[in-house]
Length: 141
Length: 231
Image 1 (tube, chains in turn orange, purple):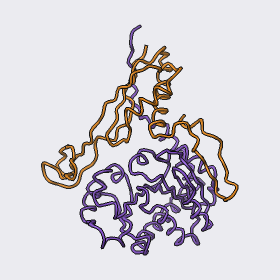
Image 2 (cartoon, one colour):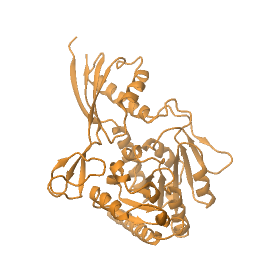
Image 3 (cartoon, one colour):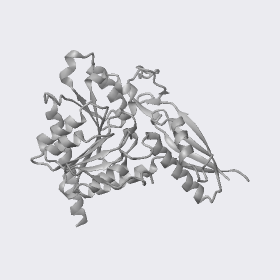
């Protein structure tokens, strides 16, 4: 479970405001939380399969997810120490932003200020790819 | 030893989503209408909350969960108006997650709240990926940020139920085109409701308050309908 190591709640004595302080977290970055969740999911799946070691973790990360692969790798190296995932390779499949025209259903990659459909010029499209943030598979021994 | 591939196919933030669902049920049980407020830093999240408190606090019981990287500046402003508030400092973390909000809820008397504002950390990227248990997602875009922000942060605009376009009083000094802003936002999100307002002058706030009142009434009705169903 993420954030299970949080310090006990701190109540401010000056104000009557309940004050929950996460200032002493060891890994405050965005990717730390993601990595923690990712590692626990991988360990859970490997445990279910009674695996001895996790060799590789295959992740699918969209451009809009706000997740930086290098950062995840950095935290993973630290967090996975002394687990069966230590030394596992992280494979990131990056998904570009793709949008689909609501009128003619054409799928296209938007460019800077050009979001109109290249086929029918309609200015209404839904995001179909780019938000991904999931674990596709793990490879274990 | 042979390598075995185990198909997972699960969201990495699945545990957050599950906790958000728990929060949602808990808020639902208490009939609380919950709004997750997201924006870049300085767009007017606290100002919008304070405006709603001034308008509604005599008739509606309001609570606030304040998320900030550090400090309790915003919580103090809310507290000064006599509104129950919990400050969550994320310690560098760029968003609130459902686990933090759960701890926040533990510190509020939920039986005495009808309307809960969760003020997320100022950021247009990560908060969008974390469900908290809210009824609606509201984002604030302020005119000085520019009308091109939906191109840069499309996911948040696509996933918000309400977009407040704040600081309209500054329009004479800016090259902001409300028409192009609306075009791209509604293109991404046809169901979105956009309220142009100025929290500074109060202009446009009446339309937003009227919408909010309607949403609160609908929530109350669904709660009493639910009660009748169970009795």
